Image 1 (spheres, helix red, strand yellow):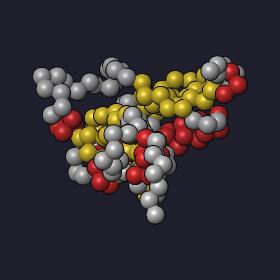
Image 2 (cartoon, helix red, strand yellow; image 1 turned 90 degrees about the vertical axis):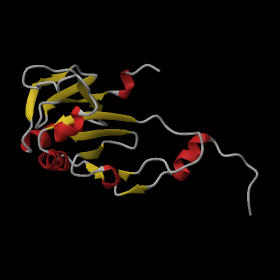
Image 3 (cartoon, rainbow, N blue to C red; image 1 turned 90 degrees about the horizontal axis):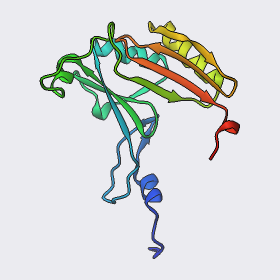
Length: 168
């Protein structure tokens, strides 16, 4: 029996997404309701080593958008990092050079966590997997942060904020 009750966009979004072992697949829906997603595109020197590095941090990859030139790193249901081999990345930046991450930093990728312990857990895993500590840990009481460079020199900051200090 069909209901006449109109579903909200968020309900349509939740109904139409497919989740498989935390490998979120993109929306398969004809509705206009769709959450805003972020895709950070990063050039990598060795795609397999980068995939192995992020797998050791507990992340997974969406195989639908992964091949020998790119890998779709699933960070959350709405956040993805597209790890692109340098030649493939170059095709997206005509007349520009790929930044030398040993000399410059163009972006810091900051991810929030639900606890100080999770910040330490992820940072420790990154360093154990071959990443490098980027800055010393910062503890401001209400906020805690650690940062690391991945295998290609991209900087990832992990932060926790005490929800009691966030004004809404």
